[in-house]
Length: 349
Image (cartoon, rainbow, N blue to C red; front, top):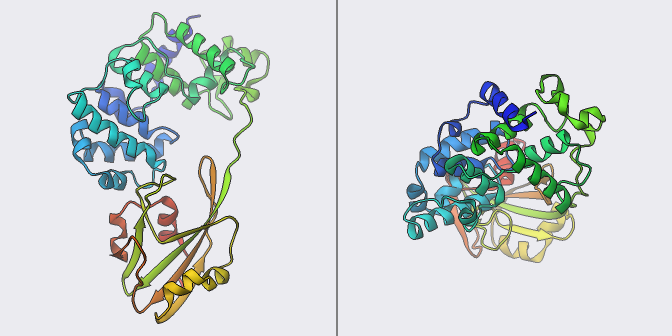
């Protein structure tokens, strides 16, 4: 059985109706691949539409400010992706005459483009015979061939790559890559795969050996590091203070309330009693103090435990690098999801 041909035949009948499926424009393919990294289609599609409306070409993206890019990206997470896209767009316009490289090898030299994205662009747009291997592909191949080695380690990765190269032989590479990704998303899903509708069920070695729940094999997960944030939400009438994150860390370039980070949880009363906080509020007339502890904010390798202290005062204090903004204008700034959630979900008193 020609596995690649079977997947392509299935794809032509069952593929998802997605806007980037109707183009070979490398800019649009690039945008779709970056946005959809670690993002569900249902979540990422509105961002793709909004992003391409705001920045319909690589030139428009390069001309934009990073703050505007962040604002369009807001809520999607992994903001380094947006930052790298902006850098790469400027590089393509200034150094490459506005044209994307036409090989995966050259695409890999651009910031924020890894092996998978380079292969996806090169195969779809330029017909390069190279497999684009993401989590869906790893899962499908590991099950079809019952690969017993961890697919996130060298041996397993090499086996998946070798099989994928063979499968796309004599097939259109761009169509094959999109077909197997859709197949993994719609049929060979992580849990409860739809084996009854699988056109390859008769050839699936994991099904024959009853190992589907155990494939793909992965090495031990990286532990998520806990962090403890305290945000000080200072309000005077309808104004508040925000600061743009500058250091190389999560949410670089986004705006947030003044932040203190600790090595362990801290009680609201202990935070307020700290000298640096009492110095900030010294001389101010405080009309209300409240606090809110949201659920843990989970990132790929970090668990953000947060505490929000809201203090209403007669005037706003001077905090280095902060700026005064109207509360009803906060939506004009790119904010981390944790701040967005606080502003929309905190209990109303």
